Image (cartoon, rainbow, N blue to C red; front, top):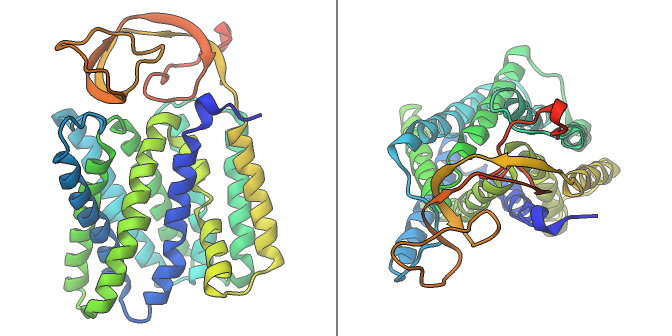
Length: 361
């Protein structure tokens, strides 16, 4: 049984995965005309520029208070780390790895991103990860292996290590972004897109890669706007409400959405391997969606800002008086509270779990 009170935000992660997944077959169609580094640059720039336009248009709307908290100086190290890890180091490691291994072999290894995200979330960032989430992550890896196995070839050790390193960088990016997920997701995604796009453009120029034609530029920017920009906004919202491990488990469906799009919309042949992989993916997704985590827990006093509605965790006064619109974002204070209800590791439930007290995930 799916508890929609906590799992409704999984839709953000699954939609983000679908939008990102279709970018692979679309970008592949452009690959014959656009070099890999320029392709990465334009996809990121398309994301950043589109979100810049979106944010500018949104700011002209009077009384818009639902975006989320403004980024503060304390957020800058997390944001910089996520940009360096996910927007610069990750793509560079992947490109270096692809020089010595095939794309299908890389696909097998890229499935490790979700598992590494879960490992970092649990071991480094102390996120509560249930056994079914671990199982779902492993099933996603197995499903990805089935998806790419028919075309796999022998891989060089150095290239394989580079692709695994790319997965580790992206896993770091996911967990670092979670630390600032209370902020405006459009602003965060915009900065990441513009920064990563600019760095990759400089790299492409330094490598002497030929500048693509304007029709290819326009097509790539458009793909980046939706498959990178909107996808990342939804991904950050999912991180805010689900935590890193569960968001990564749902986002692991991206290759399957891409494969289904390639078969259904672009005429690529299907296979029994794809069908078996989709079944495993569905089982993994269902495992995470049917998770129910409830126990008595304590909220310590907390002051922060984020977009919220006046639920059980947000019963506070407003100065100046509140105009009644929800959701809205402002600085507010949480009083200490102890209660029990179903929850996931969102902004207000990142507490430790003491097995002696029965507070186990």
